[in-house]
Length: 79
Image (cartoon, rainbow, N blue to C red; front, side, top):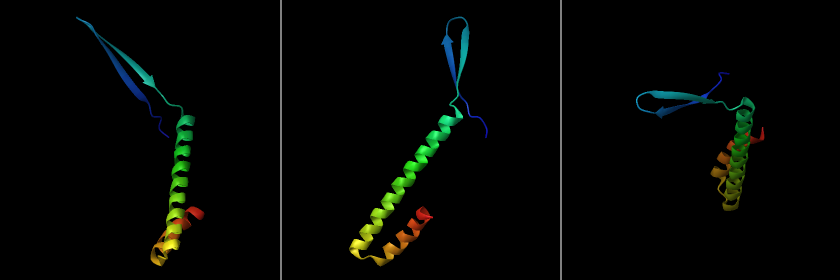
């Protein structure tokens, strides 16, 4: 995996010369991985709960077509 680096360039304007400072900020791989896994888990849980609510609403209203479509989508979360 290619290392991603964020760089900042600080320029101090002084007459007659210009001085440039470069600063680099690198986020550790472990922090990136943990944040990615956390966001994935949150979106997975949210989407699963939303589908469960929609399936329950379809059952309450008796909408068979909507129930079948939502059940197929929900099957991907159960596997």
